[in-house]
Length: 238
Image 1 (cartoon, helix red, strand yellow):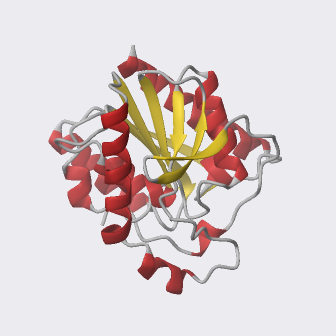
Image 2: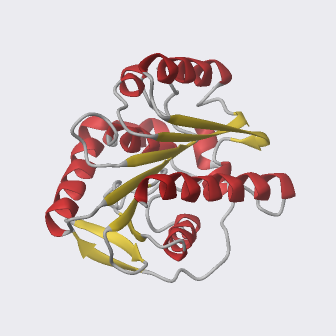
C-alpha cells in the first residue's frame, strides 16, 4: 500500500467562505460542477469524501478556471457525500474501487468523445487521488495528474504511472505516512517517472482542501499546493 484507506481524519476540516462562480449541470452521466470557459485545456477534479457540492472544492475549481482552464468536478460519490457525522465503516464498502473506477472511466470517456482536448489534468484530493493516479497509467485519459494527501493508493498503482505526477503531502498524516511517502518516492524513482513531491510542515491530512485557513501556516500550505498544481499543469499544457 502506498497510502492507507480513508480514516477519521478525512472527516475533519473547515468550510471556506466564498460564492462559487460556476454551476452544477447534468453532463456525461453525472451532476457536474462546471466553471471556466469551455476549451481544449481541461482540469477534472476528483473529490475527497465530501463530494462535489462542498464549497471548498468549488472555490478551488474556480481558481483553476481563473488560471485558464475549463474545469469539471464530476459526482464520483453519486450523491452519497460524507459529513462529519458519517460512519466510514458503513460508507466505505459502498464506495470501493469496483464502484468508483467505472464512474470515473465512464465520465472521462464521455468527455473525450465530446471534446477533442489537447490537455487533460486530473486532480485528486484524498479519496479522489487514487483515481487521479489511475488516469496517468498507460492508455488512460490524463496528460498529467496532481494528488493532495492521497488515500487508498496501492504501490502497484504508483508503479503503473506513465505521465507526470505531482504529490502534495502533509508532515503529519496517518493516511499518507512518512514511510508510505518514502515508498512512493522510491517507486517513482525506480520507474523513472516525471514527478514532484511537496512536503509541507505544520499541517495535517486534508490541508489542501479542508484546512483551517485562519492559521497562516495552513493557509500558506494550501495556497502553495494549489499554485504548484497550476504551475505543474502549465508545464504540460502549453
